[in-house]
Image 1 (cartoon, rainbow, N blue to C red):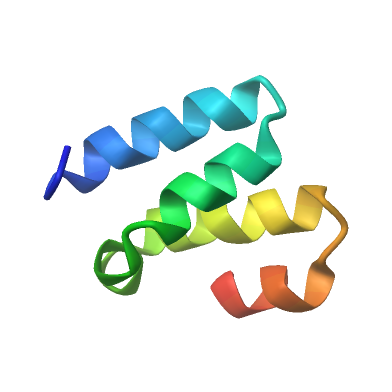
Image 2 (spheres, helix red, strand yellow):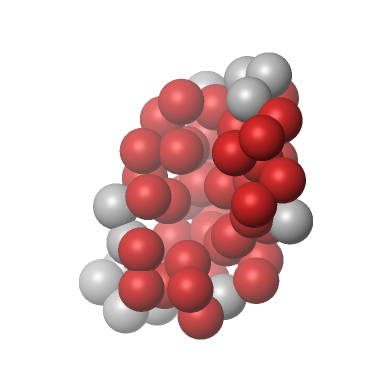
Length: 62
């Protein structure tokens, strides 16, 4: 998974599917360079923040 954004996204989406928002955030934020290069990862990070009620941070990732 080290350099595979699809695999990272799949893991994050699985966590999000179980409403493990904080865990998904931690996972996604552990790979900042991937976040910069992949809009889908960034969107999922924003969605997780949104679901936790942190709209300001969420907005930066949409």
